[in-house]
Image (tube, rainbow, N blue to C red; front, side):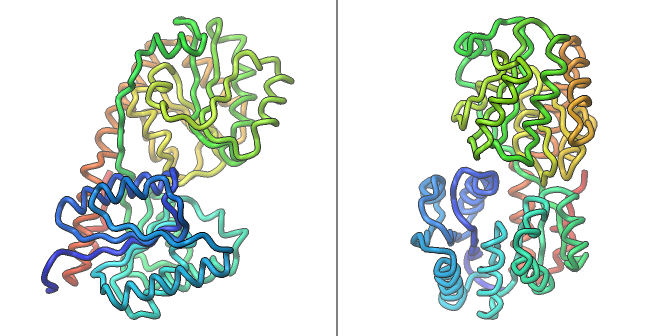
Length: 384
């Protein structure tokens, strides 16, 4: 059995403000505080969360920005060097590029145990068939393959990952209380106290289904309380102009707010009544879990890990069917008691299934089993 603190090397594509990166910023400092020695190799520089990790006792190494071929080569060499010289007890890869680059480097270095985490469905592989082939080759050379939803785990199995090495570790929820009251947030947005506020937190990307959500809201609006408003919260990835044009064409432009990327999401959720994520594909959506924790009635499309996230504590509708979204909004918009009951159930489920402490405990148990050469099956199990 190795002596001294567990040395964990995490290879990640970058440390921006995405869901995976925020996940690492929450769990790694806690693991470091528990006695682990952790180094993070980021294949891209300029990550907003790098300093947060450093303050949490994690060593962070960011690669200099380069064009793709040089970035891949430099990342491979850096990961190989760390495996050979630092000799980590466990190497863990997050996000596809880091998996391919770091996985190959650790295999060439003969360093294991190796762990990969996938936190989305595998639709991205369609545009990168060669990288997808490398991923499938690497699957059988991993000691553990983690998904954050059953849907992700099922895809890993379908890709040929050994069933006894696949595990489910759900996202750990990091919640922040709102800094402002519901009334003050609504007042700042020019929304009255009786209006229904529907929120969506998702970057403006086609697969997030904003077009369907907007159409569903437009269909439902005549049946909703006066002044009802749709808040679209997220970075514009190129769809903003089209969404604005759609809102104008459906005569709801005065009832739709494109708020962009915001740092006050807890405040905006506190000012809302219903949360909708109309995605066409999802792994395990953090935005939905955060809305549940805020006590909102949640509506999700029946794709990927979204139904699993809400369980019976939300409403599911078919993907790409705006009329189904409209029906859910009409049902909830005129029934405050139903909204309150769903919101309370959602808050309970978020606290029980997505506890940060529970998530950290699963990682700690897995790393300990891998380091000590014990069977990992029990550490990979995630009931519920």
